[in-house]
Length: 156
Image (cartoon, rainbow, N blue to C red; front, top):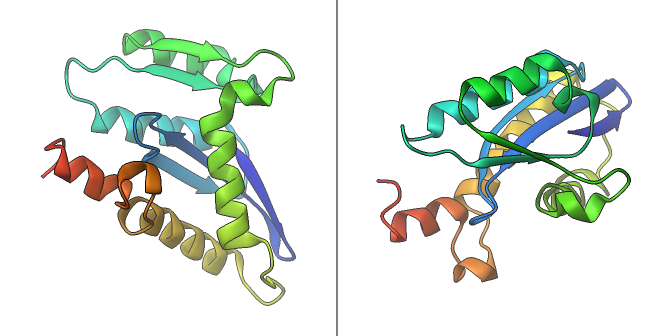
């Protein structure tokens, strides 16, 4: 989860990043860093899995990923939970790297004074879609994550 401080209010983003190609599998955006934020993101991610997919769900040690409801969701769906070591952000490098790119490309250097929360959330959501569908990555042969998956026949 990452936080954006704009003059209107704080906004929180909770994404799931696929380490295979860096695609954002799911995300949720809210003005509250609560269980609903991470649960809705998790539920969206579950909807993308095939019946036999059992990925490892890696997170930092945030309270949202240690509460009994989250752990039960992991177990109920037959997934494996993995957590970073305490105080070791490189263990969560896929997400931390994404947050860095996101904030450099979308957030830093822009003035947000007259932007409402609803507008900011829409712009952030638009960025997330752009990142998956249009933003090229050299590591994927100059393709976006979605186009890369299409070339592999993973999605139509």
